[in-house]
Amino acid sequence: MNKVRVNSDVELKDRLVAINRVTKVTKGGRTFTFAAIVVVGDGNGVIGWGLGKAGEVTAAIAKGVESAKKNLVKVPVLKGTIPHEMEARFGGAQVFLKPAAAGTGLVAGGAMRAVLESVGIKDVLAKSKGSSNPHNLVKATIEALSQMRDAYTVAGNRGISMNKVFNG
Image (cartoon, rainbow, N blue to C red):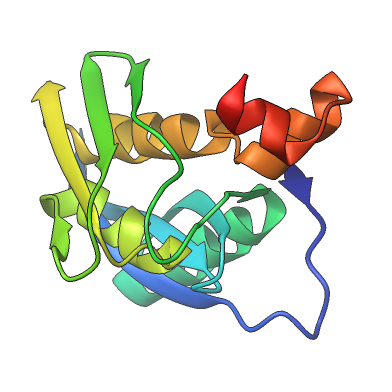
């Protein structure tokens, strides 16, 4: 994975994906806590996710943002879309991402949309199969994006020219 170190000059925007209210029943009554899954990104190929748990929603979101800043990954974004098709799985959630022509827009739902918007992808076709659990969908989407490689990276790894990558 292409881990990224966070520094002060990177402007990260956070997006709340889902909030889950958890109830613990004790002798004294019910205790409510909140779990918030948050995605942070700079809109230019850097993305991270985090989970925050606290007694209040705002505190849970703040903890999620701090957690998300600790596991950032770099994703190749080419002309507002992704370099190639990719399929990934996490738990019961399976995602399929396909590059789209300029002007298509972001055809994705729920948790996937939040991740793709945060990373700065404008045109993509996406489909989620299996579980719609937002936690697993976020993880599967980031897994798919982090596995992507652009032509420049492939050429560098193989030690060949860009022309040879495309024309064989």
